[in-house]
Image (cartoon, rainbow, N blue to C red):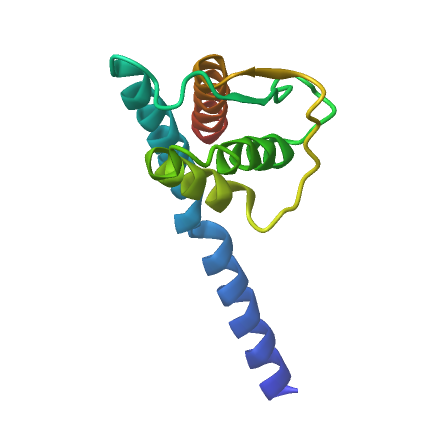
Amino acid sequence: MHRTLKAALALLCLAELIASTPLPTSSMPKMKLSDITRSIQQLNKGEQVPCNDTRVAQVAFTDRKLSEQELLCQAATVLTKVTRCKKDYEPLITSLQSLHGQMSCQLSTDNEIYLRNFLPTLGNFTQALYRRNTATAAN
């Protein structure tokens, strides 16, 4: 009985330690979202967005039925299809993929927009996610 009590106390202490320690990965998504927003701003600062006349699938960032991970996955999928300027978008694609994990997603090609219009929309979406995460962390 004495050993059982010691083991229970050790588990209780361990559980308390785990519960009180913030997860280090909680800031990582905010960093990635910030990096994505910064990358998009850099691309838009230039004289012209690389491959700006490329038509890409439109992602419904305002669709409340889709999860954030699904929308991030769709955005990454859209950018992977821009093959002519792949090197320009590779860091952005990598950041998006790291946020949605290994999720596979469905992408509708019914509606298309120019890449130059897609990037600001993606930037607004990631900026809103960043603000939402910051507000949630503050509460």
